[in-house]
Amino acid sequence: MNTDLTQLQASLCKAMCADVQVLPKGSDMAMVLTPFEFADGDAYQLYLKELPGGLLRVSDMGHTMMHLSYRNDTDKFRNGTRSKLLDRIKAENAVEEEGGAFHVDTTPGELAPAIWRLSKAMVQINDLTFLNRERNERTFYEDLQEQLMQLVPEDKIQRDFIFDELEDARHYPIDYRIQGKHSPLFVFGIANKDKAQLVTIILERLKGHRADYESLLIFADQSELPRPVLARLSNVGGEQIASLDARDDIERKILRKVA
Amino acid sequence: MTFEHLTDKELEELRTVPKRAVNPKARVANKEGTEQFNYKLESLDGTRHYQLYTRQNLRAGMEDNFSCGLNVVKPNGESLTLCRYNGPSHPHRNHLEKESFQFEPHIHVATERYIAANRDPETFATTTQRFRTLQGALHCLVMDCAVSGLQTTPDEPTLFPVP
Image (cartoon, rainbow over all chains, first blue to last red; front, side, top):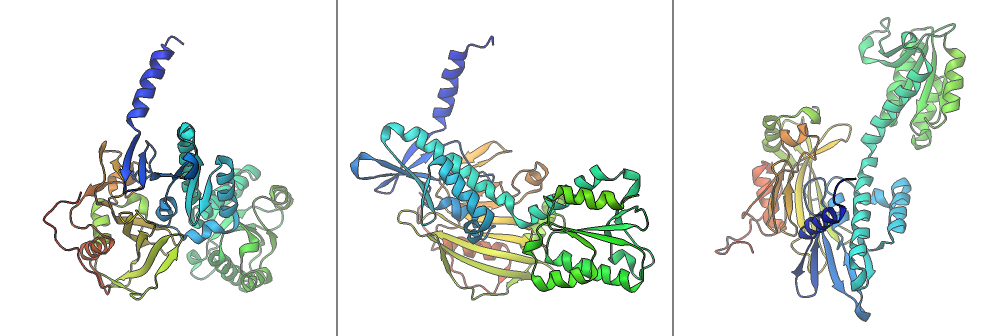
């Protein structure tokens, strides 16, 4: 490198220091301003409190969870996958939690790394919102399409197929029609209860019409569907795959039928 | 309605179309040190659905850490924050305008510009002297967004600017 690294480091340190401020907050706290901010432009809220023994506590004073609650039910961060990820984030960054507030206890000499650790944890916790249902569903349908396109030649697969012989056929779209060896294979992606019920109706209509087809139902997570919904669907549907993780099953079941 | 292509005019219409609270007596929840109210709203013609929320950090010294906001909600559950009225507990930066302000009450609004830039739609915010408390902020939101059915109280006027 031709760049003067010493000079670069000096200017970087100066610029980053300019973005850090420590301001009094009430009688027993101080606020630490850093360059970190939420995606909406609001600064991360980090506060300092003195602890016995000369220690300092850096805490978000519960603001991170409050910010998440604007568009999320924060209970969902306490169950299932999100909860496991939250625990991992805390462990990786050595961050403690007390009543919804995240904190790191440290000595004055170790304050800077403590602030970085807590800030990093806050960024990661905020990213848990990417796991919301609607985003997950969209990702599922995109992943399903990608897998199908890898398995089936483009000229043998039709997306959003309309079976014209049905009455009001456009209301009953079939996710994918794959040209089969004997009869067409209709593939449905099912990410939630509503979609499961719609597919049940579509399959019942196809059955009522005595259409010649085979069906394959691929679920985002079959175990999350209510049992009666799944039972009704199973009565009319063909082969099923519990989740996209079963790549081998998908491949085997599709390649067995594709022309 | 596709959130990705909303114009400023459409966003303003979503904010200001008359709406009523469906559950005006929503119960307070205290979750992890934050007092929360969540109201469901719908437009008077029943075609649009909204969430209105208030949040107050209950920890000592965090009285200025409050917020209330209005989200429009699609039938599939996807939501977009149309506006949010924040207390003065933190600085804010408008990324695209490259401007920022320090500790002042402020109002976020969703804008076409930020949607087009693939940023958080409600990033743009301006400072205000119209409220100092959560109750005052809620009153301003209810007035600005034509919400009926919720009892609100404005902040008392002050001779002195918000510190």
